[in-house]
Image (cartoon, rainbow, N blue to C red; front, side):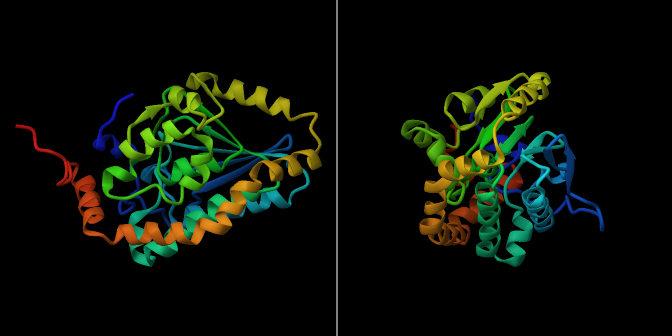
Length: 280
């Protein structure tokens, strides 16, 4: 594992989307249905699939379509480009207000958790911040050995507030403390070892592993899937109910602090923030 604040440039704690706006009418999320499987693909590589308003709206709409269709039993969530998802779109979040933007991300995570059909994340690239929360919200996650992850919020004067809802239950106490507190970057192998994801494989074998996993669902009844998912996620839904508002407020409040502003400015300028000791 490696750890560098500037590795966040591969998909930082929150994504500045000023250079990655979609052209008018351009779809950022695609839905393909085949053999009872809905494949939902995030396709905004220019901004590392940041959770912009458009991407959030399209992703939510496709999930709702999969929910309504009796022909769909499983949802696969994947991506184009070298990043699964880099987290919130900071440029838009500042425009509409950080609390509103954070609440939108929470709404997406809840939609995945409460979807009546299992959701499988398939990750070939980097994952940061809200992207890790999205992986955590999925019922199963297959990732490549080359994928990289980081809870990089602490490096920027923030905390992984909202995404702790879906990731903290996946991790043991010591793993969570190490990853949350240090912002250390880790690969797909470590993500699987720590329980954050289900399985890791070389990138070229992920499709084969996915096919095998989908075959495991072939004999399971729709009611069995629905009720078992509901059982597994009951505690998480209760925590979203009890803690969601306070975590949204915490996230928004931290973004307004001088320390977080320095962290984000340093990230954009690709320099160490003021609190990093200067080498002599």
